[in-house]
Image 1 (cartoon, rainbow, N blue to C red):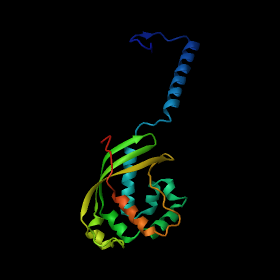
Image 2: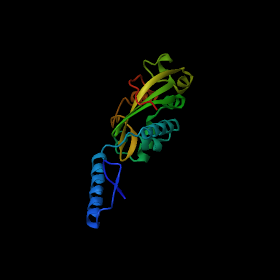
Image 3: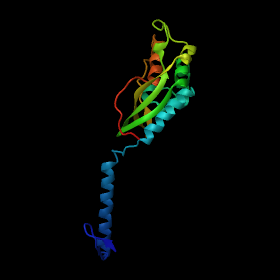
Image 4: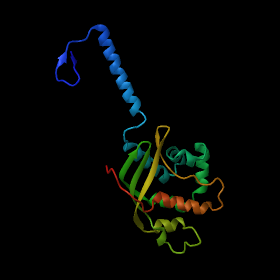
Length: 202
């Protein structure tokens, strides 16, 4: 028996040709609906959350090939995973390793809009401002390891590329005479800075 739309009753099956036309029409309606909704995916808070967890894990382990997989294509700057690993190892000083090793994180909110997402994170990170004399130098690894932890909130931006959620990071200049200072800022970005909204709490 076939249910009549808009009623609780049933009607006898339609004759062969009419029944086939009805099935075809129903299929077309389904395809049309998929066509309208296919470009607007349902919110996927698990995807951005997992991507950010991989980001933190890769940074803490100095696993630059895993890090490569979870950062946006703009940050990769056309490098292969092997080239990116060599570049990252050369550009990352010891104090940055100490920051990532000591940073603790808790994801507190995920907001997904299409192929963009914002993830709010509560961090405990070494307080570089508590290290004296950094006006004209970078901190040592030992100083970072000894620094007190301070709480910070930070919002990470993610985008979906090639079906995968990746962390959006602005690419560094190809040639940068102040690379050490930029690496310091990048390390601080990993450990977070005060930031904004917290929505769609899990």
